[in-house]
Length: 334
Image 1 (cartoon, rainbow, N blue to C red):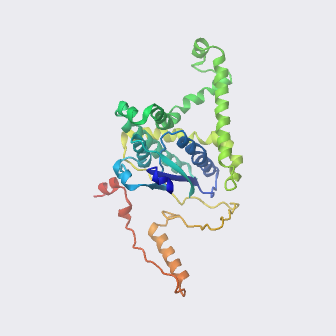
Image 2 (spheres, helix red, strand yellow):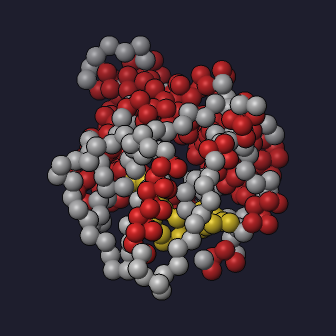
Image 3 (cartoon, helix red, strand yellow):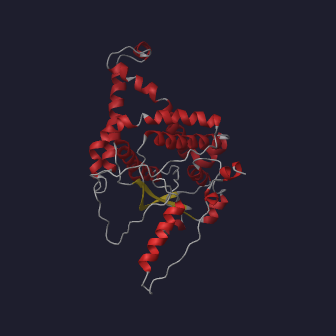
């Protein structure tokens, strides 16, 4: 944590848990590993904006308050905060720690979650681009253009994906409305060049995925990396849902349903490293509320400490559900 002396924020790596009972959850885990182990550290080293995530964040509080803290009306308020820190000349460090999260294993919850992220990126881009000249002055050329790629590009790649997929028709000699303009305006090598570009991009994606899951914890996911080609089209649905919600209900928080997975019968048991402990995840788990889970943990702790006078049991006050809502939810409920 000594990095906080020179940086206003540090964030850890955030990887989905190894409990991946189906293909979608495996691909989700590979994608997360690629982002947090390969791409995000690279973004930080290049001096670009580090879009913060909601887990494993450490701040110098007075600096966070100085930049306005959280935007309660942005559904990716953490990423927006990363931009505001960068605009004031601060940088975010990546620290060597990992947080596991349950992998989303159903298509509809996956689309809802991804659409919220993309909607938040669209809102963040629009808010900061209200005055492009001021943004350029604050960020400088390198970070300004990086911001366009990171936020506008993250959304547009899904929105324009069907157009890019259609270019595969060219490589197989099938009819395409742009075949004649490309061959006339660019030359006959245009189709060959597009084919080479597509193959190279897929090869790079596979390489990054393989490198991300090469460690002992996720090595069993390597055979699934090439199937990401069929995983990312789900993002197209999420992208267009995000654009619709930006217009129709920009502040709607499409909450992610957790606790929906079923443990795979052959799920590998990963032993804990010496000195590490396993802590159950709190939240909506299998239809059980936070209060129910907390009560069970409290009861278990009480039984474990019974007859052990050297241990002190601390009773934490219950948390009311209303206290956990977002500001707009509390306002809506009166």
